[in-house]
Image 1 (cartoon, rainbow, N blue to C red):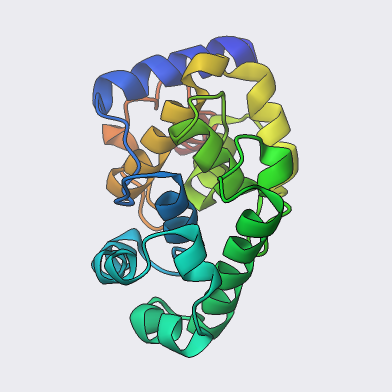
Image 2: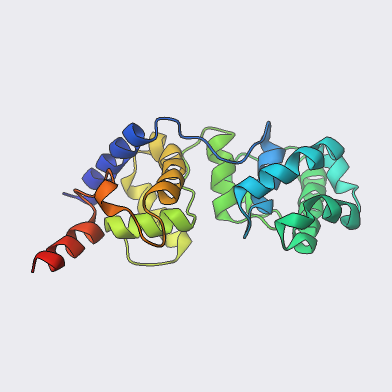
Length: 216
């Protein structure tokens, strides 16, 4: 089985297992997703979703955030951790959106990563979920599971993104990454993965290798 064939098998298996591939962050438009994803760094999506309703009710536009005082933003996002850095980045990114991007969230990874605090993971999420473009969101679940499948043996997210872009069907890559998150939480956990229940164990390099070792 080639990597492309295995990637197609993984896409199909996860589609059956998780029909609804959705981002677990709650948002209504591009700016909210951008900010919510920044808040999610080293914080659970569940916690972010508890914080953002009040935050987005107080600050509704790019201008609102751009003109905000750090201390006030910090009050709303305090429980997300790293709140001082996150507040600073959110305000700075909104000033850049206002001053350089006409107040609009750009639709390319190249422009998004120029924003303060925004890396390729967030940029891919935005272009995929908001603008419907092929995207590969390389988070910890993606890194761990695609390594187990045998697509790579590295930790470099940028290199992994390139590898996956070359083997995944472009039109399904974004949903595939969402499903990896669901699978990583429910089955292929970092500790004590439930390999025997996994819908991909019949072509997972890690599982097949471990099963062979036990037989030997």
